[in-house]
Image (cartoon, rainbow, N blue to C red; front, side):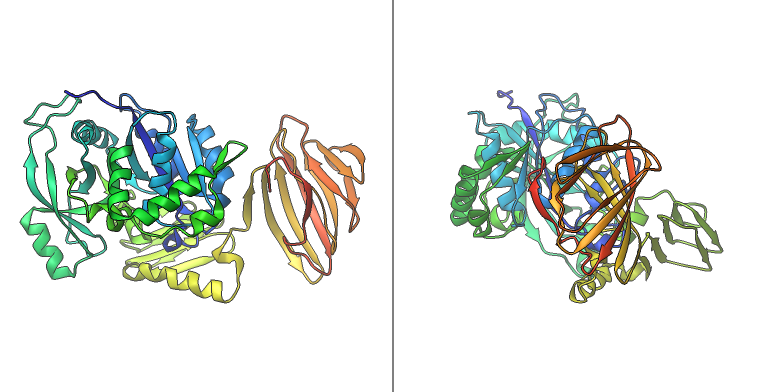
Length: 485
């Protein structure tokens, strides 16, 4: 067996997840949500790799707006990232993996990259680890491996991979040649088919769903990218070379990366290279690309309903009912999706949930914030939640984590009144510092520089009442901020 390189997970966490609105929002997408268990999808993605040997710390590529949530979720999962690379603008998966490969090789090594989207469900993590262990040997010699999902139905929502000649190779896992998954040359990548074609693919046994997961050496990927998409690689090299450190994050050069061509790994490399191979994977995989897909991976009751939260149903069948904040009651529903959050409710036929994106697009055109964020908005220091609003006033609940501080700031168009509900607050207003406890309050006049901090070891919770002519988040002038905003 050849010398085995370290395996470095590359976690792609840049998606917006609009098809799972209203639970997934642009500033709080599905990979940061606990959709199928207690842990978020990002956390599950990292933790399911614990069965791999020679595993390095993950590289995470994410949206700039999600950086603090990604870092906090990794911390909660006990996973320290080797780097969190911030994309100033989305350019699809091929450039994202290119900058991750450059980062992975910065120390002079040439590791194997295990590229995984952060928003997939894999029920059988051991099967994934087995497939990786088998695939590691073949990628040592320069192959670019993709994981082909063994199809369970004639699915028209996925692209397909047609397998060709089989390799005979046993990986470094415990399997022998009789039980090890096969590795095949990729004969063809196929776009999403119609139903009749998908049924032919299923019957042939030669086709697999395209998972969007990959395994290859960092240098192999960059070599093939240079051969087939040289302009993309030049832009990625330039953006990575001009990177800057920001706290624990790595910021790519915004102007250069924005000029990079946008394309997926499939189109930029895998469909053009002669080094592509596929390994079949039967591991309970789903990309959770819609509410119907989430229903499929849920735990149904005797009538086929998947219910989450405070739900009561009468004579419902094969439906998905989600309660986020209130009681949801369903009567006589069949093949229906109902999703309730604090500020929006989705009701849709299960066979039309792919059209949720049209709702999101309409909300954007109407300039409504419901496409962007929830009533509860997470910030690096804690969170805030809108409670009430009217002409000239806005009421929020603000929670500040122990030891955290908001920026030193001022507002030109609003005054604020803070009432401490629990915990201890340190309030700075025009260079005067005072400490407040529960049931105490302070008034912050318009135009005064101020800061709210939590010096205690428990959560600080305050009620903020804003008054003024302009009550928007854009009326913030920051003077100092520990989070670099």
